[in-house]
Length: 472
Image (cartoon, rainbow, N blue to C red; front, side, top):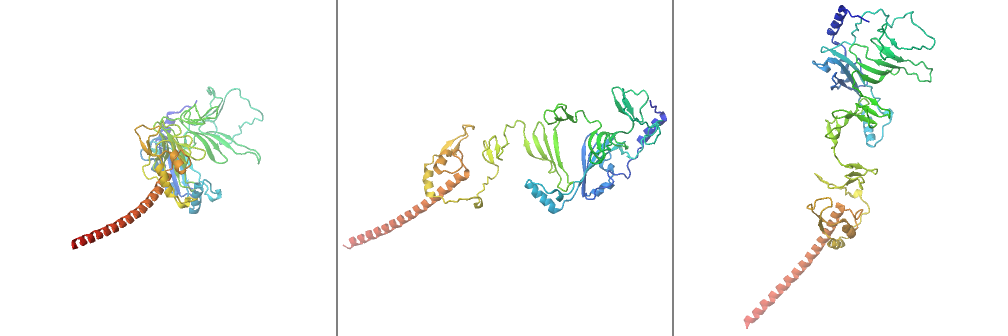
């Protein structure tokens, strides 16, 4: 048992109260040479997230953590991650954009190597940032420091079988109470290192299980570290909630749940979401998207573009409200779209409907015999009607597709009408009618001229007859 005296307890309290704020310490000592900008993301002890953007990444080396957390910073451990941005040459950027529009990729050697983010933590006590170099004050122990050489090391050149529990560490004591523990590590810095001494050609990476940072103000964490690559691929922060990550016997992953139903199951009491964040660490323009859902809608959020919601689905939307077939056809209200856009129902356009009609998009142009079309149009039945699915009072006027197709033969099916075909028939008939009107006007004008001549001749004859009668 370790007994902390009053003097030692007082020393511990004074050390915490008088823990110096970081005077010259910054979040990072040096930035990558090619870094042009940076983003610092902070997670406060209670979980809130904030960001600080640096147009010049070099400014980070002189940035005091206190300037990022504010004067009223919450006591506890703050976590941070720094992502760096690079400026991609204009030619490479344009090539990358063109390739992405075409759905291809750019050759890897044409792209910048992404800059790895830097992460860490610091502690705030009494509103001040604790100096990470502050030594840990520990009670005096008769146990030798583990870094000191000792002739008392024991080497056992055979199997060692312990039919009980084992405690390893400077703070293990006689008559240790193990409970159900089989192996216990007990001291201020607990690590288990896997150091592979394999010969060349065999896997040789060294790994380490790490519990908590060793520096003052460090993070409460459990990590798997790749010692050889100097990376930390897996970390669990202290006080992480139960089932933050759960993998069941089927390989299904639960985030926030111990009973995942699908391959990935996210549970949260308010708007579970996934974030897709592209940084500019590789030179591409930074872009962030959120995919989320709640009782109001399922949506895609353009975080970078002002958190707009360009895509939303409301609860209760019917099956195949939007349905994209293997052919690329899009159905609205139908699971079997027959065209690039197939709307099963009414369509409302709050603007102009524009159809492609350029000569450059057409072939097999044949002049229309408009005169005969006028006769066909005269025989085309015109009806008033309503759709089967609409109210009886919602009436429309026009021909049915079967009659139109039988009369003119235009379109892809006798069950469908293309507005451009109807308009084309109307225009051709109008032209034919105009020609008939012009010809009729000529005939009328000729008849009117003849009638005028006859009237003048008749008037002249009547005048001559009256003159002859008066002379007698």
